[in-house]
Amino acid sequence: MLWQQLQEQTVDLGWEFYGPVLLMVGLIALAVPVWAALGIGAVAMLLITDALPISLMGESLFDGIDHFALIAVPLFVLTGDVLVRTGLSNRLLDVADATTGGFRAGLGTATVLGCGFFACISGSDAAGAAAVGRMTIHKLVDKGYPRPYACALVASGACTGILIPPSIAYIIVGLILGVSASTLFLAAAIPGVLIMLSIMITNMILNQIHGYEGDTQGFSLARWRRAVWDGRYALLVPFIILGGIYSGIFTPTEAAAVAVATTIIIGMLQGSLTLADFPKMLVSSAKVNGVILPIIALSLPLAQTLAALQVPQGFVFAMTSLTDEPAIIILLMIGILIAAGCVMETTPNIVILAPILLPLAQEIGMNDIQFCVMMVTALGVGFITPPLGLNLFVISGITGESVLKIAWRAIPYVFGMLVVVLLIAYVPVISTVFLPDIY
Image 1 (spheres, rainbow, N blue to C red):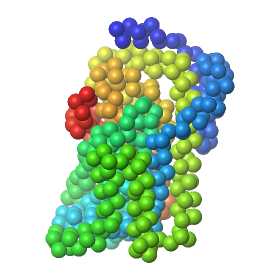
Image 2: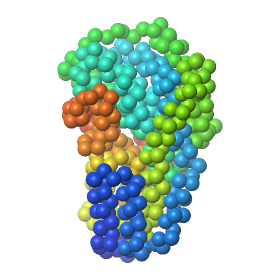
Image 3: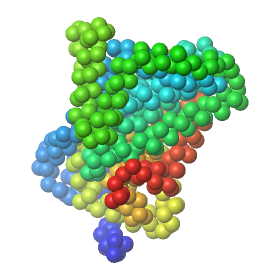
Image 4: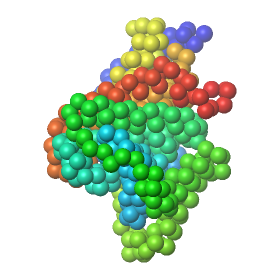
């Protein structure tokens, strides 16, 4: 029995384990780059515990990033950058505005839908927050939204960047746990849309209470057709990405390459992109990838050390010793993920927590796909929660608004997103309805 095996495999961890862990936490708290903190912690743990030969460190570093699927990460980041520089992102927002103009909170709803469109292309929440924020916050303020609330709305809507496929976070968690990224994209379709709808509905309710945006233009089919026609090339990009992946024509990596080529060709033909723009785009994308890939590389030796020390098995035993009720264990896992998302970025959270929490999820009957979707969605809440709240800092940086003021206005959206997290955790069909019967 699995339960008996867990009891037999559980080890008594001492300061040879907790010391390096506290060292990593301390370094991160001191603003040492996460990849450096992970690397120092992994080396310290290997040297103290002698769980694995230290000579494997170099090989593990290269094995951690020597994966075809990871090529999609810089390509999706570059696609988002090209989208902004060519002005195609403005076209997407125009389509969103024409689509939701008939709602009472039309511009706010359009802003969230625009974030969703951008998420379908870039797979990055910070990029979406910066791009959409620059284009919409001043319009939202002109419509009657308080400036901190407008900032919170964009920051919350941009959370869809890692929740709506194609998402860089799903590529990473799939790589860490050995799950197909294409399968995760398929599973995340409904949860991602539910998150976007929860943000829209929350905004509508708050509008109804406070009357931020009282006037509506009314839906105009002619205006909608014109916006769709003007934005046809921008809409072509997410259609190619998602259509190619879901139909099986492309792998996520191939879809990312096609998306880059498509956006560059469109920009060149329209004259909105020149050869002089390429160095800036490549440097910008390289900076983003320079943050992500070292973390992934150093996560493998750390994960191997934790596995050799039987930390996942010990964690499962400790949690199930507290309670054997699956519903409560799920709540504990969600609490851990949300707390982790408040203090650390998604990528290190995934590489550290995914191998530890997955055995616990399997023990209570949750399949791998549902766990991955629940994990990424729960971590997504951390983008609008202090003290880290990456989207809060991005929006604060482009508007000058206080991070705490934005965070306070984002509280209703946190609760709205938590409702969706709970639905994903307790209703498996939400993340598995489109998957083969084996799931």
